[in-house]
Length: 550
Image (cartoon, rainbow, N blue to C red; front, side):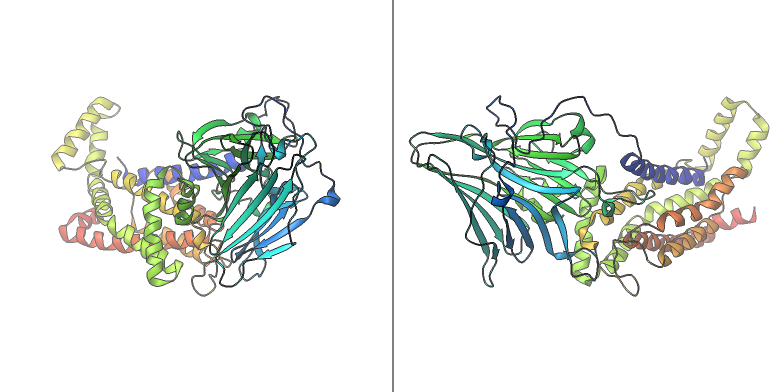
């Protein structure tokens, strides 16, 4: 077995997988949506009613206001119609490096909608009224977290015709990206009330230009996701939402809209039976994912509080895990998450020691490659032994010709006699590849690398090298590795493919984030050093030198 050929095939499979994944995301034909008539209402129907969706947003525009809430992390705009969050800026995350403009996660702009809605539905819910959602009032147009203040609590009030007061409170906490949304209902009427809380995210399905990836770059997921007792983390793509409606009842759970580095998510009552749902609205232009908490009954003369927590911010694993169970899984490492998560913890620890994410990437690459050195050594030793056997294998081919059965028997006897494992050069690669892929996704998904400088011209590890120095160096080191590794491949076509591999990879890496290219470059340099060391050891044993003479 030709170990070099195996290495080439595995590398091509990995690259093909990344390209196929991106093609499926951006280029594949979209499945046709099911022919189901859907209303264009933003308000879900109550779980215990069979009525059609309630019309929404029917209040006169002149009665609506946008109220600004500002903490040390967030700047929100709340629409008094329904109390929806229609804009959210992350004050400590800028649009671009060096810019003073904060990153805008939620927004309500022409052709680009992404808002967090919430309300009370059911028989007595104010958001289920036939005349439309309530218009709340508050005491000012702007509220700010004061110095020395840990929490900012802003109440919005509305009273119905029966004298029932609904107070919708927004609570922002210093240093956090959470927004607690609580309804305090004072039932001053003479009859019991029934209602339930809902929270949902509504977003335009078409991706904006700044969230579209290069065709050769494996893109981060953009779409909906949820967590339930059956699925810790499950993606619900926009195509799925257009085809059918999600309807899951679970204890606890959360729903969210994901994009690269950032997420907005509603976390439901952790001990309640919540209903998770999706639907497409506005003629399949917008998608909704939301949750409804259990129906509550409020006796006459009593008060009750209903609500949930909204996360709106970067994908910070530790902080999100404290908000809702499995919310940290929105940092999507794919099927190799069990390898990538420990790697991220190690990367974060190294950064705490050196204070530079680029240096941390170099250190984790050295640690990973150093830990896999025994496998690398076994790989190159096996490759050297296999090359030594090539003259004898060629003699067997000439002896047995087209008799494959005798040829196979002869090869197995030769391997047994020479104590060579033909798969010895393949298994180490198969073991190493998942680790390399997991580290790739660790660097790809880590928001900590966004706008993180390394050195010199590399001021942002999350974007491509502006001068393409790292990709060119990576290609050069890959070519040098290929030159150091003589192969027995005699087929002219395979030889040409192998010669072009460094060029192909260099072209691909031109658009890769600098952090990923740095990792690959350092990995190649380590490979060159390890390969040189291993071959010197083999020469001392007489293996590599004998192969060279032949």
